[in-house]
Length: 159
Image 1: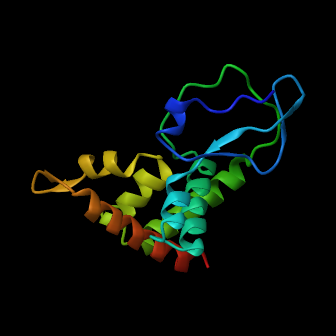
Image 2 (image 1 turned 180 degrees about the vertical axis):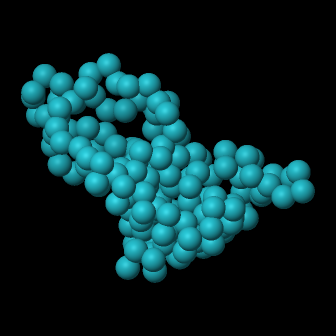
């Protein structure tokens, strides 16, 4: 019998069954539950299109590949496998720098949104409270607009 996510878990985000099966920790076939990402939710609601979602996912992938994400504790269980190596990491950094330039440079609102929301995986709400002008936080609607603008620029940049 496959256990479903708890009612408490389902009340916060859309949870769906993964499309493909994976091997679980014991080598058996697993069918994990996945939480809908912020970009998937924005696409489902019509705030962004498929190109913008893919561009945001590509930025996040490059960000992690470039090892720009905040320092975190290592997992207890380490999986073997290849890594991008120094060349892949450096190439990803150059692509992130180019994307940040396309967004207006590191100090611009779009670049800051991309760095913290797409790269560091900070929630839009956390970022809007963290950022601000004249000592006032950015309203969430404005923060969302900044992120949507950044995703549009990234979609063109990565095309």
